[in-house]
Image (cartoon, rainbow, N blue to C red; front, side, top):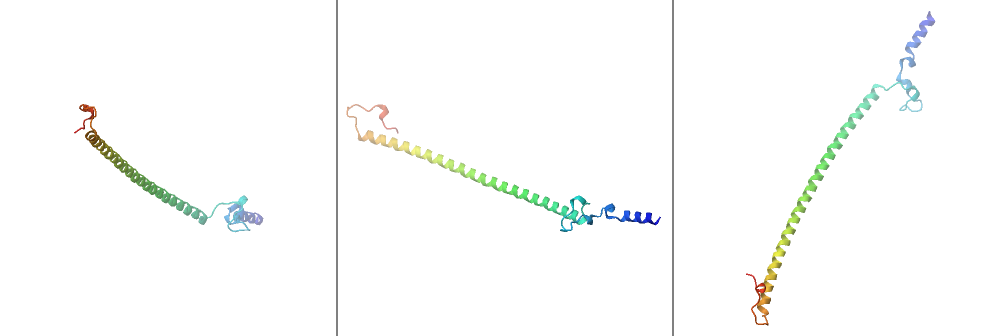
Length: 134
């Protein structure tokens, strides 16, 4: 009977039967575990993992916010460039119109000067097409 009670006591308190996680620690390094004898993590290890996961979630959220902010800044910069390009194009078109108008006025004035300076040697009246426009 005493042998049976010792065997029962041994079985109830045995590390293998109680799945004591301390038996999983490697003798070589306390941070390592025996893979063949893994009994699970203790509460500190679980809490450390949960804390790390929460930090990762917060970091990912910060990264997304920074990315969103960077995209907004990029869009603002591109819109500013686009508006500047439109303004520049409009100014160029206005200058080209002004230059064309000025050139036309110069050509009309030069034609009038030519007609006044160079008479028709044939003595005839100038054709209507060669008369200066008013």
